[in-house]
Image 1 (cartoon, helix red, strand yellow):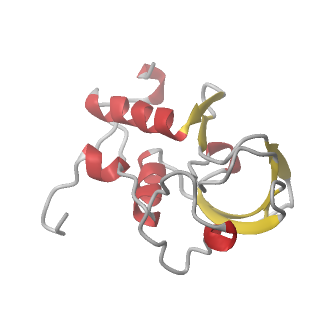
Image 2 (cartoon, helix red, strand yellow):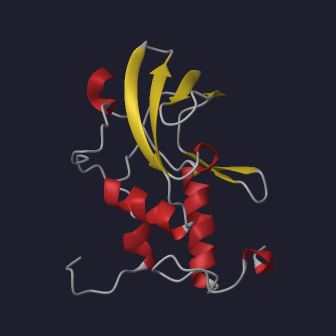
Image 3 (tube, one colour):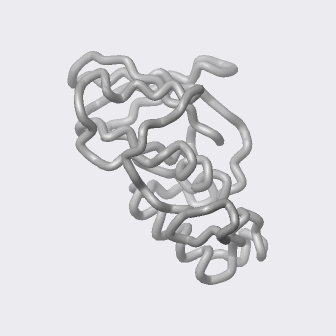
Length: 154
């Protein structure tokens, strides 16, 4: 997509396997080829921007299936992650490295988004579908601005 073209829903939510450019410390290739498509940094950034998330956190992910350490940078709150690391389904622990050292156990591969308003857990595909529905129904603009208040969303 050229810089002159207007963004589309598809371009905002597209997944691909392009390498992630620095300074994103994304070391997923330590243990081989990912098992699922990875979002580009741009797609991940756009996806989270559409949700109005602003803060940046760094996570150290310990994948207990092989003991490897991986870093992920997430814009937004830990409870609202939209990261697809392509890791095998296995218990892993996530340590937040900014602010306090709170941590949580993720019992499946990262690739989930939590909508804190409803306390629901979505897979990456479901999160994409949800955001697509918000865009198509005019609840969000393509620039990420809310066109109606969240109380109107279902």
